Length: 244
Image 1 (cartoon, rainbow, N blue to C red):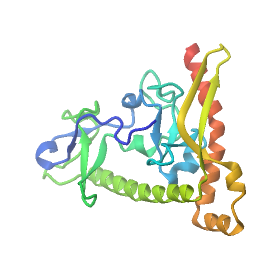
Image 2: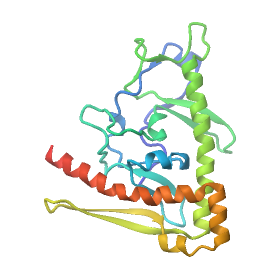
Image 3: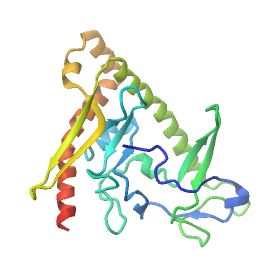
């Protein structure tokens, strides 16, 4: 359902020699995400994202599991990106907001290198947007901010993995399939993801529930369950897309 390196086609390490005169213009055109029907979420985003997106867990039980926000019902369909390229919702997932930047990790997983997708339409040398380096070749405040954002993203990624491990250890996840029927009679099926079982959650012991509450995991779990109601909103978007 989801790929952790979505969008990126020409990711290269950011260096003073290569990108000294580069500018980046973001926050206006999200066309790069137009063919993505889900994106990864960090656990810290559940409360904000859960108001607008259905949050599910992509991946089988025996594989790596990643929480994602559902953006479309069909393959390569993002119902949140308009024809003009704007993002039509109040909350934009951090995975999208970090683009065109990304951390590349070495084989040992100990060293992270800041990279930029040089194929991003917002990259330019004409002065549009924010500069990466100043006249002296030092990182600009903007680039320092990008680094801090990605460092925090990495920290939240680790916390998210710990949350997922807890769900898996408690065997709370179960496969789910969303079947969609439009008023026109058109039918769709979205599969390949998991959700928390309400039945298994309700059968946990009081001690385990208390532990989940203290760690914040219980709040995240209920935010996920509550967000599933947004499948209806996504279907409405699809119906609107069909009639446009």
